[in-house]
Image (cartoon, rainbow, N blue to C red; front, side, top):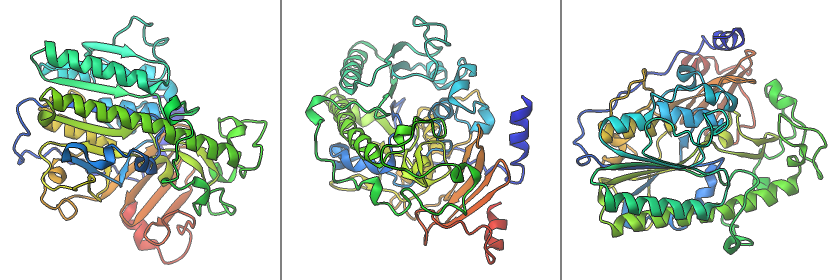
Length: 443
């Protein structure tokens, strides 16, 4: 471990690791060797699920929607490493997109699937740096039977490739499959297909209408927020927090936000194509599907454009699961499960339902089966608490509960937000008297 990272980790020793829940053994198996599909998008913000009209119509009636779904670490490449390892950032030690090439790829989720006799398929964007720092364009990472890398953002080509590969697998291989579809969209600059250019996306409120957009008074925030300038017409000629200065223009934010939603509509088409194909081939009732993003996205909240922040916009993500044994039902829309869950729980659920044997320890997630298989998941036993962390520059670690968010930055700055009364995290009350007991409990 280098000295810089050691200092960062030492700064956080005041926050103990969360208790790691193990997958339950009490639930009966879903079925014999279920198929598993993970669809992961790039920088898709949580509210954008409203534009996914096809998925949100609950096709085939077994979708669950987790509006309180989060990424533990909102750096895209880091969160994808967490999904592949089943580990928090502080356990796999890949702290930035630039470091993903240091990952030992011989001991990841696809290898665990292969060990159980699955056919494994990858389509789309791999970890940051591929193919240049991963052995070149002809390099196939361990564990993948079929590996198709895409460096572009043309969603329709992803959709066509995944349906072709899925059909071929179902028709020609007598074994369960694991498919990882990794879109490079709707990451900026979003590139919607022609049929959605100009489409009405007004069902999703503009970010400029949020109370924390371009927050005027950030005197209660840590230095990384105080140093970010206000958004202004025309933006800036210099970089802001590593991003191009033109992004700090409210007009650019609205335009790119709109394009992002229009491209998300094409992603929605692809999900419908997948479930239709599975139903046609008779595989849908034996397939579990996870739809998430590798990070959220802040469109000017607290003056932040981008991701990698501890606030809701950066960490909250679209989070849907198609589960054939879903006990409750949402009718004409997915079943809404209002429990705190994270991308770590996706890996834990996969390990649980597919009977995998992870060779990385510790495993940090919790299987979602107790919620998916509960008659009333909103009252089922579940610990509604999450760890959030980013350990690169401007590091922080925190705890998010249903009512509170507590954050400690690498420089020791503390934030506390009463989420019930201040859902937009406008007022940091950590340094106000009267909250000592809450801080003590969370820390």
